[in-house]
Amino acid sequence: MGGTGERGVVSTACYIARLNGARSAMPMRRARALCPDAVILPPDMSAYRTVAESIRVMMRELTPLVEVKSIDEAVLNLSGTRELHGAPPCVVVARLAQRVERELGVTISVGLATNTMMAKLAAGIDKPRGYGVIGSEAREWLADKPVRLLPGIGKAQEDSLQKRGLVKLGAIAALTPEEALRRLGPRGPELVARARGEGSRKVTPFHPVKSVSTEVTFTRDIRDATLLERELWDLCEQLALRLKRKEVSTQGISLKLRTASFQTRSRAMKLHTPTVLPDRLFQAARSLLAAEIGDTAFRLIGLGSNGLAPLDDADPPDLADEQTQSRVAMQQAIDSLRSRFGKAAIQRGRALGDRSE
Image (cartoon, rainbow, N blue to C red; front, side, top):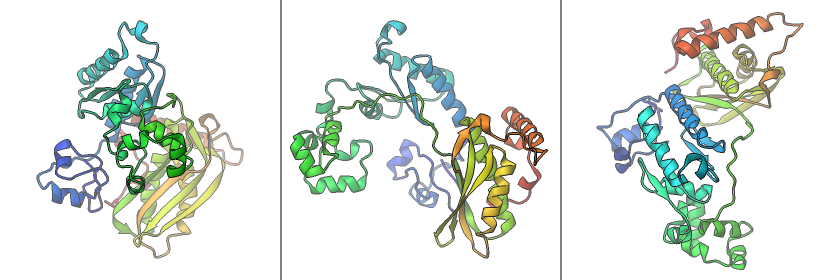
């Protein structure tokens, strides 16, 4: 699943495709070469968000302590809920998985453990449709696993640990505090604790939003200003929608451009007042784009927030611009129509015309 164009990338791959070497973030051309018989499907983010939110509702019926990590991952704290549900957590999560499959038609993998890190590892034991429980045997279970199994350890850190003779997690877990400091530095003791399956991070239901952004990579390089502005308008609509979904507004914008030669350019602008209106975002972003276009061909354009504010602060009445409230009302009407009938139900004029694929 992913983009089918010349520069498309794999969003995700089924397990059979993975056995043939396909993986997320791989160029689609490479994936097609590895899996010539594969069926390529375009992503449907609207459907994914709907299903994800339905699953979160089910989770919050079990406990208010639900931390959403991403669209397809969440952590629940079920401590003290046995009497409430009339069953231990191992039964509760199994029932959750069965309910999701029965009511939504999708399968999930669940893991149960004494901390968030081990729960994540437990969920990955028997994917797809996995069910894993790791209790007091966590250290023993981890001992013969490669160091890269721990979340957050990438290839570079794995290579560094292996050069120190630390190939398995059991070898790290056996280090004394003094050895950990000497061989691994200030964060050594923390790594030793994780290698033993220990963790104290709490489930945090709410995280403050720090930034909101969106970008697109073109199938073919674009140097035409009209086409670039059309892509920019689409990003402004996307950014405005994402801001509203996160219940924030932005006090400024940042524009990101990547040239055909892979040079990255960026510009930023502060707005007079916070906004979630695509029109205002576009007006500011277009001026930033105009300063960069020239005769340059671009392969990517991105737009991000620059300083967030509460949604209630967005687009206040402006004596210097009597049309502000009219634009707010019009955008609310557009949002309402699209929520019922989809984005294609109503379009602004500047969004029409031949688009870059």
